[in-house]
Length: 109
Length: 115
Image 1 (spheres, helix red, strand yellow):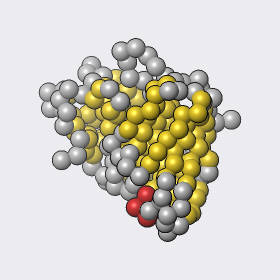
Image 2 (cartoon, chains in turn orange, purple):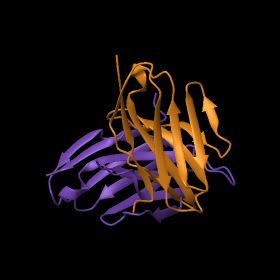
Image 3 (tube, chains in turn yellow, purple):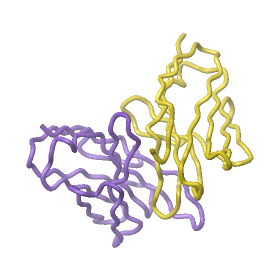
């Protein structure tokens, strides 16, 4: 079983749609959680950190459920520019940061 | 100008050749990392360095070596390249904050093909 698992997609949605991505992690001692965005053939960039209380940044909302070892990312009012791969990232301590394989999103006009 | 740069951006080489990938950063970060990315897999850590004299193996270090020449420079070498080392390689940096895990900043990547 992978340490961080994501649905690879692709998710194909029309502009204006709401889309949700899920991620599960296997190490219950994991300490910190993030979503990164990676555009095609580009480097990953931090989108947002994920806190137990949930956090929101504009159209993006991230949630963490430690009991279920589950992280989510919700994108409201999707834009064409949201098309990218979204990486779930889990820090488990020491040097160990685990990147999920990513979920691809295509937003269509 | 980019804060984390990598050279070369693309490289095609043959099996058995020695290859060096270079990474430089102007962010002043202590911590530097080398990852590889393969389709369908997440980024996997090859080596990391928390300071100039600190070198540590990641999860897939076999067949690779690194050198931290200065705080700003971290090089990855493939001593004898093989085809399954064909991948997209990223260098990353992060700052040191006691008790926290902070953002990693990635270079633009090096696409390496080993024939």
